[in-house]
Image (cartoon, rainbow, N blue to C red; front, side, top):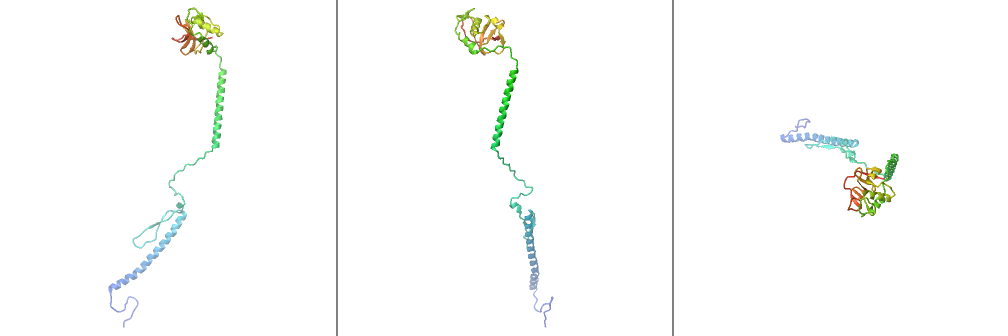
Length: 256
């Protein structure tokens, strides 16, 4: 009589080797599958806690993801909570922002007004110093320049009067007769001849209208200076009084 005995003994019957192998494989696979599921679940839980901790302290490290069954293997990157609110990652080069300068219009106007006042004061001081230096200079022993409207005006009134040798009147003039007559009309008495006028006049290097222009030394001709290169004179026989060019280099200029 057959009995079922625990262990490796089986009930009597026909033995099937293929069925036996399938049963053994099925029973062996169940613990492995359950173990893999437990490992995967525990791995995901650990990754979740690690991600939360890293987000709290700003860490951006990479932690291992949950265990995968089979060939699929992956990693999980923890999020960075500070980067989500604009916190810059240390070591990352940031764009430089130029500061905004707000100009105070009132202060600017006050500064401009003060600068203008300082410049005006400096100009007044410089002008005062120039006047002081001019007053301190010794006066030169030079007669004042004749009035252009006086000497030159009187000389121009005789335009057209003919040259007459030895003449000293409006009916006819020679060179020195003309100059002595014009000065006399202006209230200034000077010698009659050109050489005597040259000797008596104060020599000047920069003539003014109304000064005398001398030629030769002693002078053989004299005229009345009008402007650079021009004079009024009685030149020679056959000419008349007029505004003529200074035809050659004068020997000098004289002032009374």
